[in-house]
Amino acid sequence: MRMILAVAAVLYSASAFAQTDKPPMVGDKPLVQVQSKGTKPAATTAAAAPKGKPQSIAVRLQACLDIDDATKDRLNCYDAVIPPAPKPKPPKAKGVADCRFLKEEDERLACFNGFAESIPKLPKT
Image (cartoon, rainbow, N blue to C red; front, top):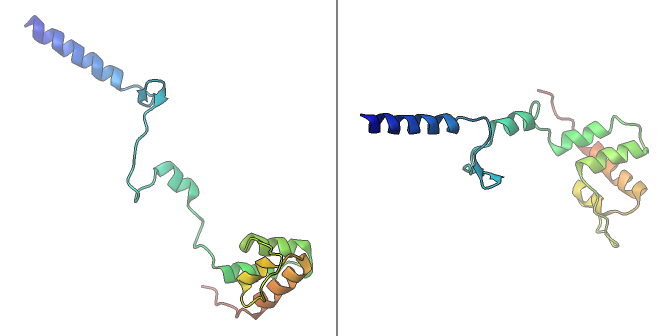
């Protein structure tokens, strides 16, 4: 009978120690918990969730047209949508993405303006 009480006391105390607020440790480092690729931790999912639907590149480029023309702010807006990657000999711009290869800011702004103004206005839903 004493043996059963001793075993019960040891198990009860072990379960009490397991219920601490600290994360489980391996040596002096916290235990890493592996999750499947399809799931994300709840804390990061709520913080990283975008508000509303993500906007397309065309909508974001058209939003840049609201900023005063021929200003650095408009170019910065375009560069935020499509980051610049200047090349010494840029190819002729056949699409809006090719504007990022132009080195001169004025040329890049004119290129972006040409494509952004030719995009048909999308219906707002």
